[in-house]
Image (cartoon, rainbow, N blue to C red; front, side):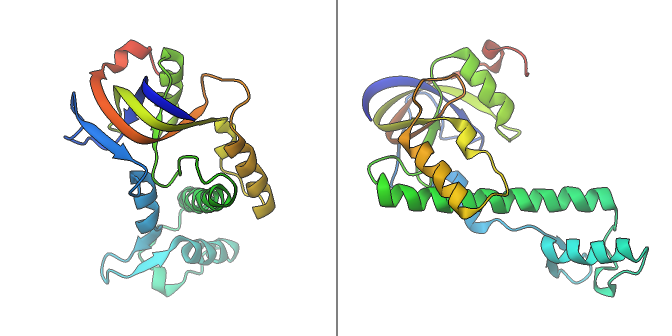
Length: 217
């Protein structure tokens, strides 16, 4: 849907000095920060002596073998902690990353095939309605340590969808495709926790204090 000069909030996580009042940005042509992060993302552990990196799937497999054999360790991983809880945490983090990559590849493929006029998740910016409840929800659910909230004015193409459809699960490709179709069909009824993607021009109006949106949930 095309919009003209509509106002939203945006949560910026990257502590950029470019995000100041009156600054203007165009989205939809270049990969966004989220997609650039996927391009270089990997999960592994590094041998501090040799600098060699071992992928988490390899490490988890070797660690599981050690746990099952009650102590026999792969000599290549002599530097590794072999703590079961930490191994599980590292493996889950790696699984979460891989699941998100699969999701984004499938959603972009479905968009290109069936909904080419909608904003791509690979180049868009994410916006939030001018509702304190919506901002509080996303502040509580977006990862990052340097969150800032900006009020912005946007002109371009916007898409609103149920954010439940992007939650990462270990599901089949066919199920991911079904979710993608539902996602790109859009939200039937607006909800405070909807996800809004946008491509076009964004003008920064002002930075807004986080205190305005209440305490963390």
